Length: 565
Image 1 (cartoon, rainbow, N blue to C red):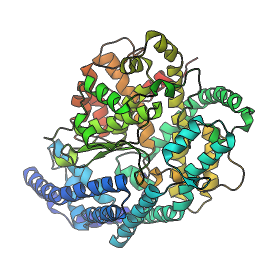
Image 2 (cartoon, rainbow, N blue to C red):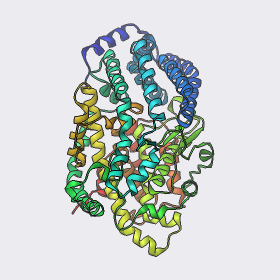
Image 3 (cartoon, one colour):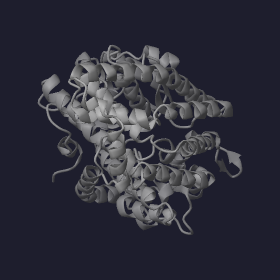
Image 4 (cartoon, rainbow, N blue to C red):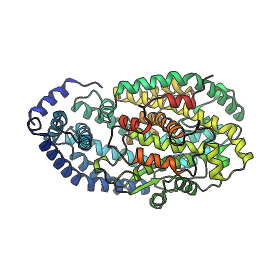
């Protein structure tokens, strides 16, 4: 983390303006803090519930009035954190050493960071909220075209997965990127506003502010990703060479002629299903909703209520991807999907419902402020833990009723798919994390060229001919979840750590080989008690040590997915 000098000056002002925390007793301080939190939550909770529901309405209908409502509510929420006097009180309490109750101290920490990132001018905050909403509304409602006909992202995924004609694939890939050029001017204006906001509270840019306020260390993140680059480079090159040979043969090309649209995913973040068995064929005709419902019930994490509230199928005006949603912190949990009978959507549904059960099973006796995941990457880890099951042969046999013969065929390739997927995702995450860090360091540079420089370096893809466009901006995370993507990779590391702990310490098995994790409540009960119920009572590193017996480590991800020969 790197501060500029203003932050030190502001701290001196805040401290001098709030001396009472340093003169009060512990009992007096804790009473004052409890009163502050009670008043804050009374104002925040109804606004947060309304804003969440407005977001759901906008995502499921595309109605402009829903986005306008959400924008207004988000602004009102942000204004709850802007009072410098309240921030001064929080900082003074936090620094006083006079809060002995760990749950109270944890709430003060969370409020401190929420207030810190909101100490920006009100007019600037309003401009950020308005612009953010406009970009998301445009993204949600935009429908790309192929040969003049509007298509959905599901249509594009289908074309990239199964279309044999190179030109048609290229048109589908280009269509997937169109929205980037549509939103780019607003997105870059939003990036500049975010940087201006970060500088106004003493940080060099928004990336540094965001990482700091999420209780992470930018240097540690960089170290982890440098290590992942080193560990995954060689196996990725080997796996991609094998993949390229298969793809090139199918298209009648030389491997050197392959372009990004030949890889079955707009950003090459998923493994093409090209090995000896097509996993989509295994899921053909499967009821993905029923599959997930039966599985989660079998591990003592029933989701019937979540599914009843969810929106699961594609239609005009609806958000084209998927997400998990919590309408309040009292059990209104849902998912949005656009289901198809494919392995991609089996993985996506299992993943999003992993987020959902994390939210559903928070202990409602915990304070409202702590009824959320220990960290963003903790809920990602749970979602990834469950999402990986879609390529687990033993799981597929149990849930899809496959014969031993069919399962034997799947075993030969499913492990390979899963291994390649994890290494591929690590390389993709390297692109996203390095790009976004540089985006906020200098948004005036040639970002389109930078994007392809990083894609070539980490994913080993050839850039298309001609001038680079803003197709990178079609990744909505740059708008809706800025400076967040590193959490997906940290989530993958933690998912492997959870898996190792469940296999060896919960189930008491020598290894996880051929383990389906079906119809065994112990895994679900472990997650409920050790991960979900505490919510944010503990910091993320404390929660991980309590739940797995050791700090976050990349070791189990390496053991699980990176070849050692």
